[in-house]
Length: 215
Ligand SMILES: N[C@@H](CCC(=O)N[C@@H](CS)C(=O)NCC(=O)O)C(=O)O
Image (cartoon, rainbow, N blue to C red; front, side, top):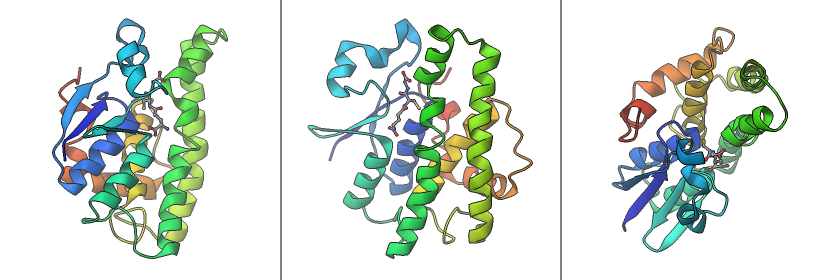
């Protein structure tokens, strides 16, 4: 199997896939897609042919192009079941998906680059406004996530004392929160889990500063 990942060092959705690939011990080729250079290489014709959504990541497995980070992670988990990214029981999988989707569906999309660009370019908002927007949706999302992790009694991992898709989503989102100066003190479970996960090669080796296209 030959895997190629279209990625951008700072993309949190791409980091999810980099972490999943690392967790599974899979080798892959990296093709950087710069999201800002020349109006954004994700909008260039060559990339649009690969991913009409004009978003990273995209993973090529041989001739097959797979888009959407969550679909890619689950594809990797099904094609390479060990070590697993999902619990073996239905309730566990539902819990992990709920935590992962709280980040990937409810926080991340409204803070995406194109949303921030629209706020600034077309709706007349200042940089300060858009930064506040970003922080607002992270704090709303993290407050409920923190409560859920506390209720589950989570410590080193989001769920069940083992690596899962929820962890894969958490770490890149915490990285983004720090980048936008969100105070993490109100979220001790999130901070503890993130600190533990960042001590593991799965996340330490795939973080933005370790990428070939890092600036
Ligand atoms: N739901 C998609 C989201 C992908 C996404 O939003 N990627 C961002 C980077 S994290 C992107 O490519 N943004 C480019 C843009 O907004 O123009 C996924 O999980 O793959």
